[in-house]
Length: 94
Image (tube, rainbow, N blue to C red; front, side, top):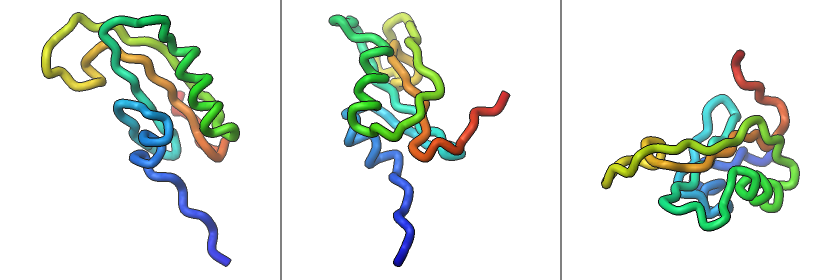
């Protein structure tokens, strides 16, 4: 019997419908960009992560506000982010 492989960042992005997702040292960071909030918040995104991955351990979440710059990356634009692990073992460095 083989052990299951960890999910790739791309698979996690697709399941969460996030704009971008990365994974470093077992910590996934999902980002959703916005121009207008339309009732969205980091809490809503945390709830989305927990709904899709009930075993997820949320490490950090928040909102980054940036002035609009056409063509900027998601990380350089206004966005919500959620940092989480799926196995509960990774810890963010101090």
